[in-house]
Image 1: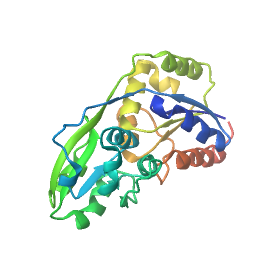
Image 2 (image 1 turned 90 degrees about the vertical axis):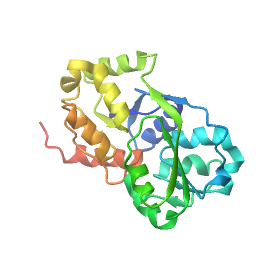
Image 3 (image 1 turned 60 degrees about the vertical axis):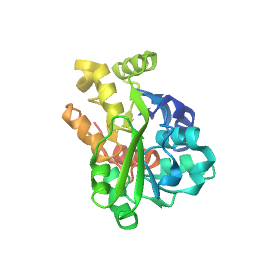
Image 4 (image 1 turned 120 degrees about the horizontal axis):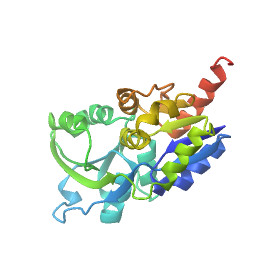
Length: 244
């Protein structure tokens, strides 16, 4: 069973290994490119009580700028992938959201961050729910540490489109709203027909909502918003489908 999955190019190898460990054939495609942004030199971690990070790409960008300084501040992260990006550098986050969306992280953080100074590091374009919730109780500073853009090299996207046309893909996992929007726009008016006979899995309700707004039916969504959970959800869904 071949599964296509949207992931940044920087995480291609680890994603392929993960998919193969579950017994599937991977095809990883990157509808977005991560562009690190410079951090304002006036931002000092010791001016804050908490650092909030919402993605592994954000963790990577912060490490490039602050390095060992990240060990000296309480860090709150949105999920296991972001946590893992810190752990591999010997930095252990103080809080990992039980539900892997920004609003859930804010809800868990509000009690411990009340009256504190909080630095939120995120993408240049991001939903405002987390920041708005934290500002109800804390002094929040928001910085953009990376941006996303449509990739200049579209050869991999074209290859996926051809594979879908030829029926060589059984399922596709969309890992973010931005990657879903970019890939569907790249497919254009063919998107619905290309994905009609493919199991469409969305990681998280935000991504699922973006797909549905673009007319793409979402077949399944894992309860835990991780690639491992998505792969197992596809396995369950495919085994429960009636034979044609």
